Structures are given as C-alpha cells and as structure tokens.
Amino acid sequence: MRFEVLEISPTANKVILVGRLDSTTVGQVEIGFTAAVAASGRNAVLDLTGLEFLSSLGIRLLLSSARVVSRRGGAVVLFGAQPMVADVLESMGMDQVLPLVVSEAEAMARLPG
Image (cartoon, rainbow, N blue to C red; front, side, top):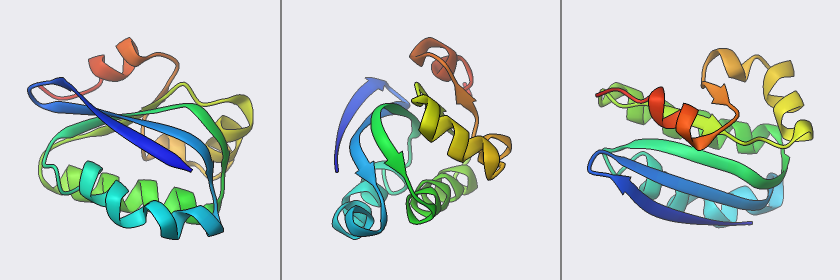
C-alpha cells in the first residue's frame, strides 16, 4: 500500500491510494495518511482508482481521518472506487457518511468553498 498527496487547490489536497488497505498495510500507512489528510487542515479528495482492496480497518482509517477534517470545517470526498471497493463501502453504508462519486471533478464540486 502506498499513497501520494498532491495540492490541487489552495484549500484542498488530492490523496492517491494504490494497493491494498487491509489489516497488514493500515499499520504501515496510518500515521502518514492521518497527517496528510486530517492534520493538514485542508479539504481532501481521495482517489481510489488504484485501491484494489479495502478492509474494515481501512474503512476505519478513512472514517477517522474524515471526522477530524469535518470537525475543522472541511470535507473528505472519495472518488473512482473500483467495483469491489465501491461494493464494500456501499454495503457498510459508508457512502452515506463519506460522499462517493465517480470522478475527480465531481469530488471537487462537493468540497466546501
């Protein structure tokens, strides 16, 4: 699992996730990911196009980071999930908590300000 952070506007970052976000890899990326998303104080769009697998621990990481961003007045929007990842998010009702859209443009449109 790896991720890359790109500044895409003065108030937002794009975080590109690649690989598997599961019980093995969450521990490897948790601190860096949390710093990139939650501690940055910026809105975030999470690019899931390269995410092959998402476990419950991975969902917890996404949700906990999004909650911190939300408390600071920002938003996190997910986009580009592969069918298996989208099914996991939808079956757990996560798409009701974290917006899940098809494209980066749609994700950007969902961000505040």
